Length: 564
Image (cartoon, rainbow, N blue to C red; front, side):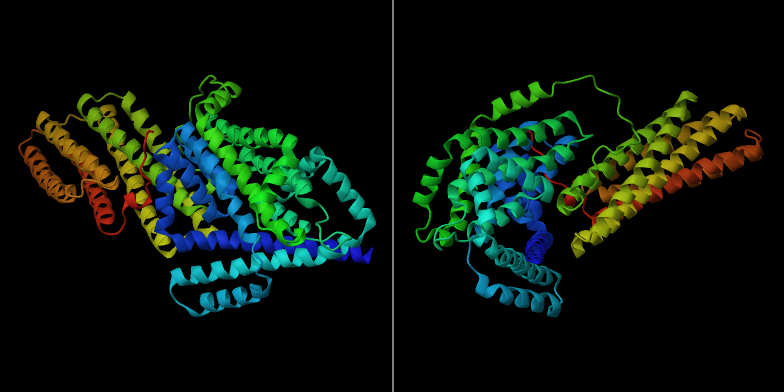
């Protein structure tokens, strides 16, 4: 009983070290990659073939096909990429995930502690953020293999247990049973890379003859196929509550892995013979880890080629499985882009944040247009729309801020990303301020209507002209935020001067009308309140322009979108 507990504790402890090392390596690789990671993600929305390549590269960096799949689901749910593009990324992710198994197949047990020590020294001594991340990556790489070594050492006694050997013999001789075992293992651990690492370690244990593996390649392949099926559960969970295209993307991931597994399960022995033929030769216990890695790569590579050719068919299948339904009206107060499932992939998460902030800016643009229309027509219905818009902006701003706070607390941001993120919150604050000022102007106009204040035609004309300048000023500000038209920054400063001139002129003209009896003195306060709000909107436009031009570039966050 004591020996059994030691084996279980050693196995789970080694697995914990492996998963921790893999997650740490993923996070450190992302930070070390920095801008290069964003360039890889930029391939995601270009075309299908590049989507496959980007999916493979992204998974190699993230060390998780599930993470890449969840990211693709988030992008397609946000409308940043089409369904075929998302599916092609998932195909590529299945290739990228085989990199972990290939790395594990290397025999570096003699150098594990060297990696741990070297990584620790680099991350502990150097001050450069980039080199600290490199050091942490090396340290995590050592931990990953330390976990593997721990699992391997505690599994050795199992090779001499008759009961265990008999149990493994049944699994190895019944492929369907192996498939179920692999699926169950990945469902529990939620990482196919981890379960494949366990499989590789287990397979390297020698049988009674001391030369052959206790399970053999033909026995390991069904478990490997089950691991591929089990990893699809993460994608299915991530698609819950998402758009139909997101659910279709998750379904495509399931179809990819399940279809290939159900076909290959009938040809395990011929496939094992092929892998043995193209893999390194030697005693089975010494080469089977590489054979399992090659089996994994070969399976996913072949299935990717087949399904990439049949991409149109895959799209039709998932469209049939999840047909179009009645579209529900979306809640304007709910974010269009934010997705908490990809909070640990900052390059992707920040793109969604940037899109959400630009969405807020568009809502505020509509508010300014409604305020200008209300000043002309005095239509009461517009006030309700403006109030609803302001409530929407307040809710969206709160949710964006909460999302960014979660992003900060996750610890995945690089120093540059953290700085840029703090500044985007500053821009968001000005957008929210403009929204509140629009409501203030609308309330003042409503008060004028209800109290039957009679502004002179000259005052209303000048007010309309001032609002027109503000509308143009804010429109130019949005263009600068979107990453282009930087020359408009000078125009905005000129427009601000024009607003100030109009403000001064309108105040003087109003006082002159009061003095000559053309306008009542009790209109001074409401009129001044409108002018003050217009002036403050102009100030916020200048603030946004200066911040975007000199301190933050929204294009930094954005990934170029392509339609093909």
